Image 1 (cartoon, rainbow, N blue to C red):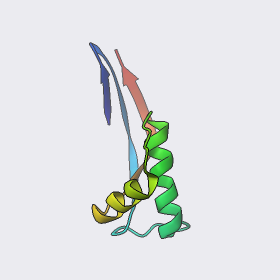
Image 2: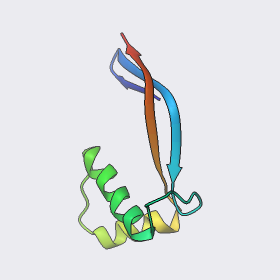
Image 3: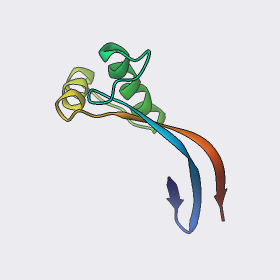
Image 4: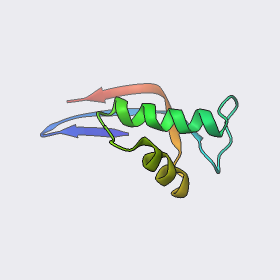
Length: 76
């Protein structure tokens, strides 16, 4: 993964895992996935006026969470 802000950037390399409706993950049932997607969204600075609508769209679009296990991090 690469993150960029202006001319600054950082990269993270490592093993990844996916948890979603099409990618079962131990310990993450549909309810936990619903809450996890909210947590990821808010951790990235997102807000929402209608969480029920957000949950519905995430489910309709079959959104998933990606876990990155960092092995190497670098940037400029």
